[in-house]
Amino acid sequence: MRFLRSLKEVVISSLPLLAVMVVVCVFVLPMSAAEYLRLGVGYVFVIFGQTLLLIGLEASILPIGKLVGGSLVKLKKGVFIILFGFLFGLLATVAEPALAVLGVQIALINERISSTVFVWLLGVGVGAAVGFAMFRVMKNINIKLIFALFYGIIFITVFFIPNQFVAIAFDGSGATTGDVSVPFILALGLGVSATMSKTKTNEDSFGIIGIASIGPIIVVFLYGLFIGNSKTRAHTAGTGHTLGDILVGNLGSIALAIVPIIVVFVVFQLIFIKLPKKQLIRILAASVVVYIGLYIFLTGVDFGFSIAGQHIGKAFLQEGKDWLRWLLLPVGLVLGGAITLSEPSVTVLSEQVEKITNGYIKKNTIRFTLAIGIGVAALISLLKVLANVNILWFLIPLYISALVMTIFTPKLFVGLAFDSGGVASGAITSAFLTPLAIGVSQSLGQDVLISGFGTIGFISVMPLIAVQALGIVYSLKLKKSKAAAIAEELRLAQETEYAKTAERDTAEERPPEGTLANELDKLENLL
Image (cartoon, rainbow, N blue to C red; front, side):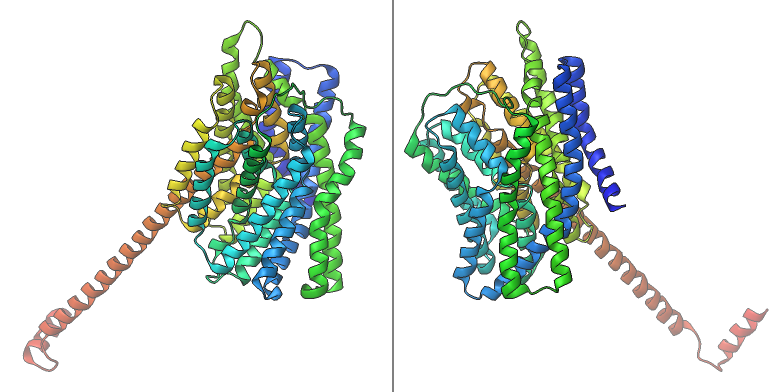
């Protein structure tokens, strides 16, 4: 029953994405029979894989994160807690399949960039940032100040960075958070805030992923200063890989994505947690379900969806029909929103928010808010490519807007917003929107590293604005409801006071018992 219920939710969530693919790939620019088969197999794999993944995450990775986060306080010394954050951030990032794919794409376009070095540098950036996030919780540093300070540094130094590295820095930041590491870090934040936070409130439950996304941007900037700009070459995504190749290739890469979390859990179980044997076996068995679900899900994404992005781009870049390309903007808007509803990590985040707020913020509210934000992000990304505009003309105003909004947004929503930026860019996003932007950029004869990349960067910033806007709306509604409650209390108090006064006045006017006037009043009442 649980599987069928989850399957139904996943299918319903995927329908908007399916509708876009059908309209474009069937009616606008038909595919070959082999491509239809590939797309159909990929879709079925994604549906069943995502269902298993979500069931497994709820029974294994999320409890593991809470247990490990709650046990970190037993390390006693802050330096050990920070070191743990660094090591886990490093290992989880290096093992992230989506980041490996991005590294290969960049290396194929620019031969001076090593995909291995790129991945490990981002791992170091994430590790350092996660360690700092632990330090922030322990010292109760205002998260709004952290984001303002670091993003201020980023946008001051960005003008000195080779322009080929600006877009890939923000893309790399979004790609570091995957379908397994995100749920674990979210749950880790819950455990850490419950045990190490001085305030012991939900405000510290979010923000670790948001801070973790800052580190990769800084290290890629430094890498760019060392490498510099260079010539690029064309690359076509999604070709040369059979289903067999993908099945074999994903076996090891997905295991590497899960193994660091399991190893950390086992070590903490032996030293600190010490769960009963039955509960331990149940969690480890559920982690196998996570592996199977993620294996099926990513295989479907790699095999079926890898060709869809570029195909959609071709459909709107036909010779002699320049006006047609601008229709990519509304398509990108719908496609971005549809993909968001299908991302497993978005589903996990929205469910965590609903639980933490005791149902005050509904999961579908978060999902649709993110869908709107990422739809707009996809539209802006394609507009940047079509108009061949520098990415900073968009990113700087968007980040300034997000940072200004932190002044008016409740702290809980600030951490949640910056976490959402890292969560929203998942495997389906990488398979659809990045190849779409790269394909359009190549077709227009642009420098792909400058123009084609940046989609994930936009997807990382738009949730900051969308979720904070939601937080401001909720804050206003809460203030109105509180004001209404106070007004009702005052009204009831006034009515009570009025009744007491009236009763007192009546008592004062009533003649004393036994007097002639009193007896006459009684007689009049009887008559």
